[in-house]
Image (cartoon, rainbow, N blue to C red; front, side, top):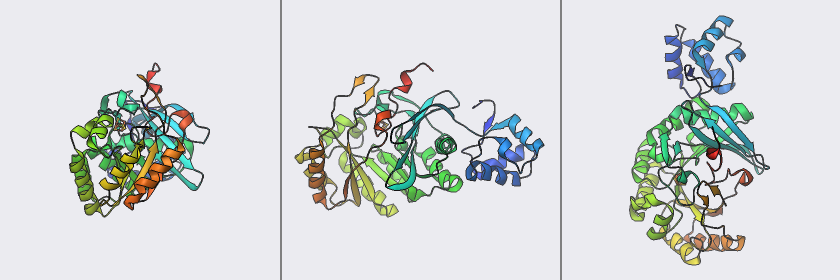
Length: 352
Ligand code: SF4
């Protein structure tokens, strides 16, 4: 149970833990012990830390707690996907998801980077909330730690595709990526950051030369349709955005992922497929098609529908003429609103 008067240790780096134990009047090697218990052994209480004396454990209990976030609600899907509603120290709520795939013996966590989101994409449940605040790096990292502690799963991949636009909180996101590598043991190559197209954020990320995967939620190959779906597109138009992706790819040597939402009759037409193939022809990228999930939002049912499988396959074939690999995303947790674009669906409407 989180208590705001105590210092939360999960999410802290080794230097931060060293500062904490020093201020507590303990020798610096205690920081390594805490680091190992929190990140390697995933302890959920100080009593589990058997190589610390009773006296030290009591001292820790008085001043600190392990978790930064509290699990306010957990839903488990028929396919095993777990959707967490985490309560932050100030009472704000965010959602995170743990997914496993039958064909892969690994677990992926989808984390939030903001409470709410200012971008306001018309197909997205979170977009209907508006922006509330940025998460700290520790709050991002502790979503992964909280999921691991609760589920017992070892998270191998992290995707920044939960609530919020990660690149409008780019400095904390960069810190959290480094912390996931250094503290939790999840390297950059196992991390994907998804953006709606925040060009200054893409440029900032490029400077870091991280080996993460950058995913752009493009969703439409022309300016007019993109503006209709992703309002932030008015600020950074397609030519500038595609240029930023080229530069990112050159600076990092990484292939970017183009995420493309298939909406029946709007973005899934043959004309759009050909335009998409043309737009990304020279880009070092692959394409991931996401058939829309029906989602209940605060303002009611959203005004788009999911294309048939035949239309999905036809779009895949036409856009594949760009020479890029085009996949159709396998959704998880659809029955608990944990699939892409479905986070923050109904929890927020419940009294807290
Ligand atoms: S899709 Fe992402 S960027 Fe768009 S409103 Fe939703 S959370 Fe924000």
